[in-house]
Length: 453
Image 1 (cartoon, rainbow, N blue to C red):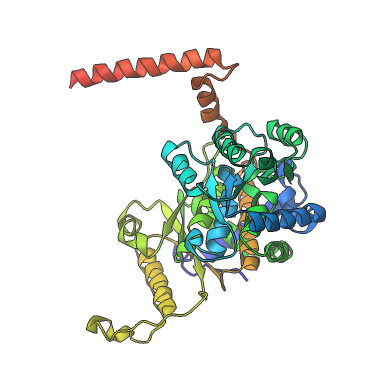
Image 2: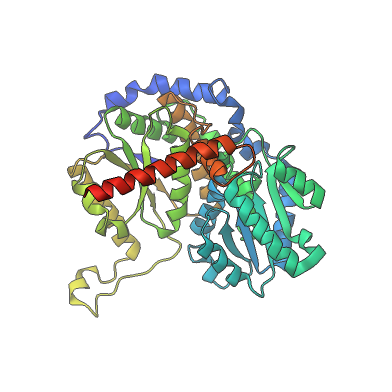
């Protein structure tokens, strides 16, 4: 279903070098499956596509049906892995213009991933006069951005619906602990579980992603079936396994000096899938001074902006091209109104897109940029499940190959601690004084430097 084409890798990395990584990949895959590596307590996603809670899954679909029945809009509140998987699915499987299309499913808005006043106020205006529900997603309930957003939207719900607001709040959080779990139990809100052994960026195929997907009319049974099929298929211990091919190629390139992986895609609907992919690999591998920097480009649009750098800039990157073989419909080019297009008259636009991809790959290879081609036959609910599991498994194996714990994120806490202190959170008084002193010193220094000019 997902194929990996490495022919544009071989001008840079020989087949022998790639095959030499097989013992390491085998060992890393084995450690992951046997839960014998660092972070093993967060590898529940490996079995989630087949061992998920069937009763909760039934409740997810029932809640989604209720939202579709009584709400014109659903506000999904979360940040990072708490919203990227759902948004990736919504745009990839439905449309980047989902909210503009005529449909019998609710509008889906995403909040709690920014501290922008303008963004939140604008969303308030979209909800004026509309029946809506809220799905707050947070393992602890203490992350600042979603906590603030939930406070604001809960207030809006309660002013609109009074005591009946509780029927429109859906909580996805830890099974037993955390501020949000406690609040859900006190208020009687319907709740779903973020498994304790699944980290946020690996949670797209849990209630975190499944409830918003189901509310949007996505076939979540097919999504999980696709992931389950991928789990079986990519469990093979062989270099014929597409996961092993991808893992080996990207790690061989890293060891050869490449420092950036560009996920390139030719369908605009893949934009938020790329955002999900960036978090998955960035947060999993970027630690201990190691890891490829994950970035993304949308072709052909970015060929007219970033294309110059990719073709001619520093040779620090390689491209992983995610290409969809068959679009959902067909459209032929007409050259009758423009003589310069006469040679394309009658050609399918999908074929023009395919040739643009092939031409770009050859140009970039000639410019010193290796290319890996990952192809899927179509964008379907099942294929989405397969893609998610493909990249999650690739990331887990690749992290172990790199020598890091791919399931923690110690660096994320640094900004949070500083923000808590600067905002005056109780218990951070000493740190707040220290940070304010540093900020004051930097302002004084800046003033001195400006005067020196």
